[in-house]
Length: 201
Image 1 (tube, rainbow, N blue to C red):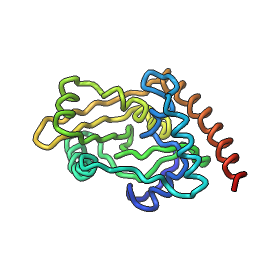
Image 2: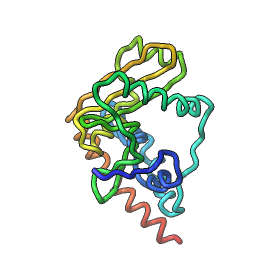
Image 3: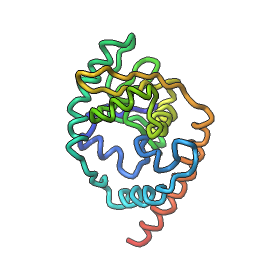
């Protein structure tokens, strides 16, 4: 694993993600059930375009998303307070020096990674009552383990004033095998598409 020690959402962080599949978008390559995603072509075109343009696509940030980022530091400090493991922060992780895909953990410990979600109150209550990791985050969490090689990943849903939800997710070898194949095919097609665009310049 190779890490980029920069502040997330900084210019350096955005630059390191240009044209590279990231775990937060792995659901656009493979679904939580392990099937090819119908969004793959659109995501592929986005990344190919970024490679040629040399910049990251601008993404919309709602008020709820901004609030989540503001609460995230509080959630991160809470995790370090209640867990036996201490997390540290990194900017970006690649599996190797090829840097073909990446993830941006909210934290890393000696034995696991950390994914923090700070949703709106009704969504957090829904997560609490279900007591399980929301299905939509499976590609991101399992994908982060694929990138880093870690055997487990913590999922933390946090809302100030309410009980937190902390779940330790283990590696799903069957799902990871499907994700790895899907990623390899996606990256191969991404290279071909990028070269086609480059030839048009």
